[in-house]
Image (cartoon, rainbow, N blue to C red; front, side):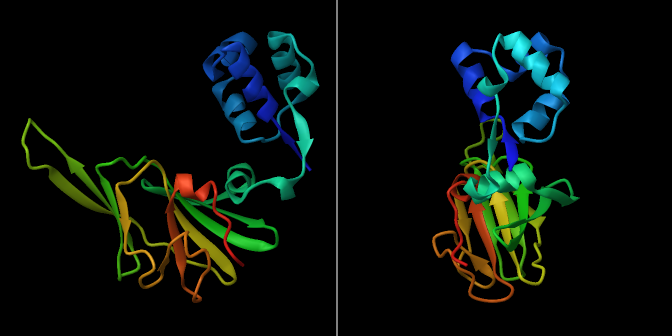
Length: 204
């Protein structure tokens, strides 16, 4: 079981109160608000301050939930532990319903001007187009995003934040699309947008 603060965010939306407003009303730090957003443990003093500020009861902002009811995406956001981090991605690890996962979340958000390349050298590349000074032909910058790895009996997923124009190279080499839903070999890795990951349930 874990404490779920979904009720708090719904209550804030109903009252037209933002997270920054909540910080000001309660005197809590942005770090504590971020912990609440991840359903992490906070003190009873934190809960009491929020209830006082919003003139509500504890049950109006939180409830006990079962981990098994969470989607893979929400479980990753709630219980994933940081394994490593660089300028491009954060790698988190966790076990969900008996299966080990390693998720590579990109730090920056892709746009319609972003192309993601999954290439034969087992590397994911980020290509960004820029329009500069009114020039019709865009400047294209291609950079290495991540060369993900899979541990034994582990499912690895590269999650692209935002909405890239296209992800190329899926279902080629080690790269597997979310539509396929199942890994074919011991080195296969899923690559998908964050929107797709929110609904993703691999066939194990």
